[in-house]
Length: 451
Image (cartoon, rainbow, N blue to C red):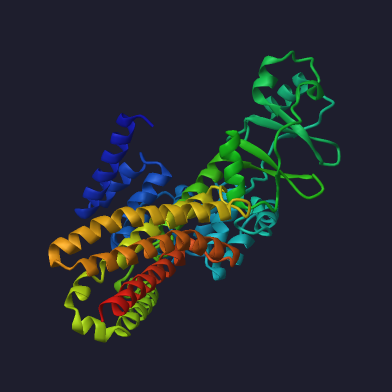
């Protein structure tokens, strides 16, 4: 989007927010009509709950479905509280089948059946088909609205068929070819349809080398396929190669965005869709578990330090320098952890290269430890005039940074095998390892050589 267009959209949203703050909702409604659903969703998420609910009353019902799909879970819940099943069904009426399935999945259980019952039988059956697949699979992403033709007809027949339909589903860059029993055979790119002789048979110009997606494929693998092959749409088939639907680029972009947001929020121990304006008590409860877990690991590190209380009592210098070793190890380990989690998300790390990466990161940590241990040892000597303390902290730093490199690889790999999200828990485990190893090494060496 050009910068000038972005600036216009930003100005519109700012104007709406300013008018809302002055409680001029009629003027706000006029401005909202000029915004896209995603922009309205951004605006709703930027408002306190009270103003959000007031603004929602001024949004046209035919736009509500798309907007509800764009907002986060917490915000959606606050808006749905004000709606009954009739209004929800009306909001869903203009959605595509794949979006409609996402919409129904986002509803509270008590509302799902009520909304489904208000749909016509054809749409209800199609939505239930999509809902029968896991949400994070190709089946959960697919759109059932796909244009299909047979291979034994001419391009002219296809063109007349399209004119008779009058419109095509969004993001239609190819027509899917099936046989009389519904089995996938290939695709007919639109550009070939428009540029080849109308008397040519579909079979002579269709492509059979296009990647198809199995309905059970993970959504992250689907996103990677679209990225690697620059796809706009792709057919979805079952295990018998029978065509079920298609996946389009707009849904894949949503998957990529959600995965990125989920990773970012999990690294802070937060839910992906947490509402910035949610009530204080609710936010406090959600964050308490994470803080409690961190507190437990902090006590573990303190307990390790406590085992060397006599050493600390006799040499005050150690207490002053004690935090340097675990801190440096934590930073080094976090760098490795971030790179490994990114590599896992991109499919770059697997059983074939894990050992090589583990060795490489251990060496990187060791070399960084050697470099920075010399710096720390020199500063400690100049500061306190004690060469032994400088040597001890240097040795501890080398050990902890090497361990941090190993842990930064081993922790996310192990968590992945245990089906635990490393973005959610990896940082806490890593911090515990570097704190405990760092303190134990530093204070243990000090006890051996200074007392």
